[in-house]
Length: 508
Image (cartoon, rainbow, N blue to C red):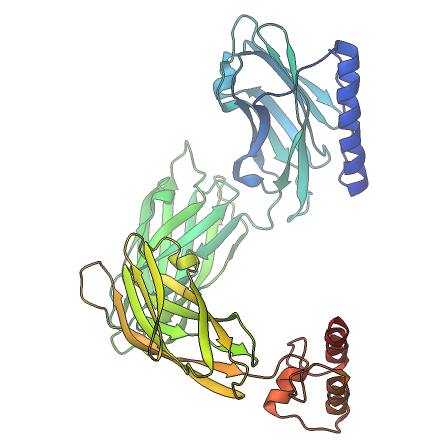
């Protein structure tokens, strides 16, 4: 069967032309060979191990066939790419594709054509890899570049000789800026004074095979001490793991990668267990990775980069955020947040506020509390009572646990209104005693409506004039007038705010 090859091209114009050409090619094939069935649950996909490779390095491009319901006798496809960037080393059957009796590969100006023939054998329905193409990135390819791979002209033949056309599939081949990326995962840790064995982990994303890895972990040694460190499961290819104290932190050395599989998985490679001094001041402390040396299997050092982590020292705490609204407004969001270094199974708290001027219209879960079994908010004499019960713990971390929406009464005076936490109970298990937790109260600000600079309850051209007077210095605004005149919320008043207020007037 004749192949219809599309030229390789990166531009949007060429991409559009290519899409049209694929469509016309399919019509042409139908006209030549009759009514070719379309895919009924089949799809051919690309999988690039680690997403790409560094200049001068090799990588396998694996071809995955989704096959829902037919027995396949043969598969043919074209793999198109920029041959100025990637060099084909070879192509072969792979895993489920071993059932095919032969594989034929033809070179194209913009890639290669592959034909897998089953002869008397058959590929049963099911998903899996059927082939792999090995490529090498040219030495002079810029780091940080991306290169499109396209599977096209895909035809399957079933045992009855029927041909099935599959849709094109494309994916980007990445040439990374660095060979190894180091980071703390997660990037932020929490603990209180006196806590012991708080675990941090170092994670890597690698694009080359490594025979050894060395790095230092630096921290404030007056605040932290390392209880112990160990190799993570994702670094199982290394048979030796050593760590030692140095000035300002510890050094880690990983050696003797298994020769049959020296390429480590993308994941955590080291666990570090910190003890926190009992007198440690509350604050945010840096965790740094330094003096990184990674060597490949030939002993050459490769390019590496690292991101720092942060360690929050604080007692577990609950806090109320700031709220803002103008008289008569509704649905003004205030969030209640939680910092916790233990799993929380139950939370209850009162939020007290001035009910003469504020009211709560709704209480909702957040991302952190979406799995909590019971989530209730109810009115009490001086505010609101919120209860979160078991069947889904709130994991360690930092962030909002409740979204509370306030309405401001029309007659509410401008000013600040306290939002006070009271009767707070936080439990680490369903039946245990409440944990010690510090509280941070919030404030709700009743301000003028955006654009209502003179506070008469209507946004009009008088407010435009007042805003212009503020800009040219004829009028010194109060805090509330400034907030109303700052129509676009950029903390300054200029011509953009005038335009914003004029638009409000016109809309009204």
